[in-house]
Image 1 (cartoon, rainbow, N blue to C red):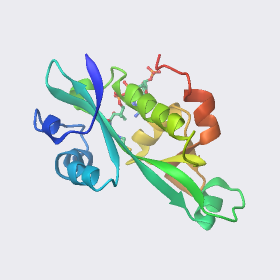
Image 2: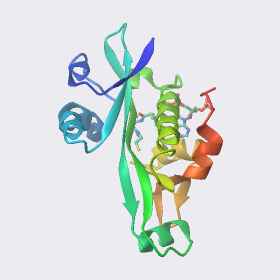
Image 3: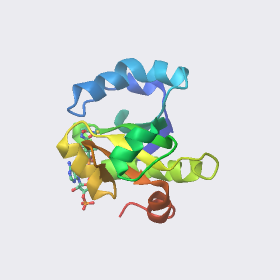
Length: 170
Ligand SMILES: CC(C)(COP(=O)(O)OP(=O)(O)OC[C@H]1O[C@@H](n2cnc3c(N)ncnc32)[C@H](O)[C@@H]1OP(=O)(O)O)[C@@H](O)C(=O)NCCC(=O)NCCS
């Protein structure tokens, strides 16, 4: 059974995590702990408690686009910076891919953001995909591409509420 838990460095030592992207593996193993302590990002682990493994993880943090970047990304005149949240990382271990774990993680992250949106103002959720394959995963789940950057995608908080407030991954 897979259970979402706040980041704990103990869990990372259980079994090497390998999602096929060295950058995301190394970040979890080497940097997640200090980022957590600094309140720089918040990481949630999806633990396979029976196998004592990390099946996947995601990290969230705040973000902001300058007015100029917001305008070129979304094609709408902006007078002020655009407050945002960043889905900074999302990854599934190779052994767990293709079974809905990525979708489960994405829904969990977005539902946490829906809840946060009641207390914290932000207009969009941003993700910077590592490559086109990852971008397609986000496009499939309602994200739109920035007009000026194919690997950066966003979801408006309005769309987030409409789609994810009560949704369960099917
Ligand atoms: C991208 C990733 C998170 C997908 O995780 P996963 O557990 O294999 O995906 P799921 O099984 O949850 O797939 C959910 C749905 O998304 C689709 N999907 C999965 N990967 C996809 C992709 N690359 N492009 C388009 N659709 C994709 C699945 O077909 C499935 O569709 P369905 O609901 O209609 O059946 C995973 O492959 C991964 O961790 N990759 C390496 C790290 C990475 O690139 N992370 C993104 C960094 S920006």
